[in-house]
Image 1 (cartoon, helix red, strand yellow):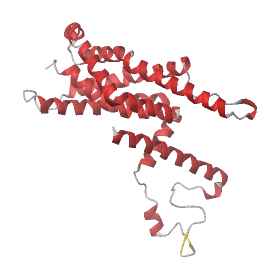
Image 2 (tube, rainbow, N blue to C red; image 1 turned 135 degrees about the vertical axis):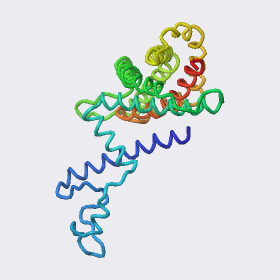
Image 3 (cartoon, rainbow, N blue to C red; image 1 turned 45 degrees about the vertical axis):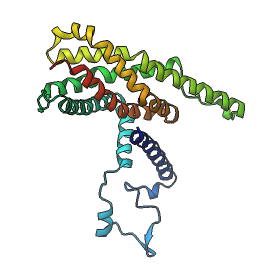
Image 4 (cartoon, rainbow, N blue to C red; image 1 turned 180 degrees about the vertical axis):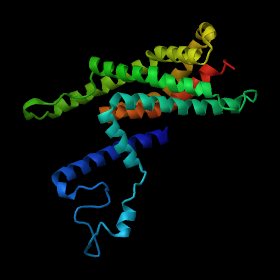
Length: 271
């Protein structure tokens, strides 16, 4: 949980830094650059940096960092929002299933240590076609029914302290309602859809009725315990402090843990 919280805070800080850099570029277009370490007017020993210098070219090489990853992800959300969200859900579902298979191999020596590729494809497809779109539209519905953000104040009228306090309380209540409904009501739909879609894609359609009869409620209970033990509080913090555009990323990161648990629970009796 500590690692996940640090990731979420890092993402938020990086987004703020990127926004600040964008403002500086707009104010000084002549100083725009693809590399954040080449600053406007920067010099070394009072000597202007020459772009043709080999050392500068060495510094200008692309460096994979949290800031560049965040920038790339935010850009994709702006240009291809739905595709980015759905693909993110699919990739993280695949990662969660890999963890679940490793856990299954460790806890049950009878299970082959070879990765089940058909199961991996099923989990990836479920995230891409079913779970990803469902989460997107469900969160849009939450926000439409009970907004967690303030509308833009017209005519530039500033809020009073009393209005700010009331707004903060309403936001906290709305966020809490979202998280509780998502973790303890919609979870029935999430798990049933996961069991049905993966069962069909893995060629186990005939066994789905028995799985729903005997494994569905235990899976729901495990999911709720997982939420109470940490996922729901972290989701509450991310919904409350992160802007709308970063909530999907934070939920996707948390879903790696949830998918790992659910993939393990739903597949433990399929062997």
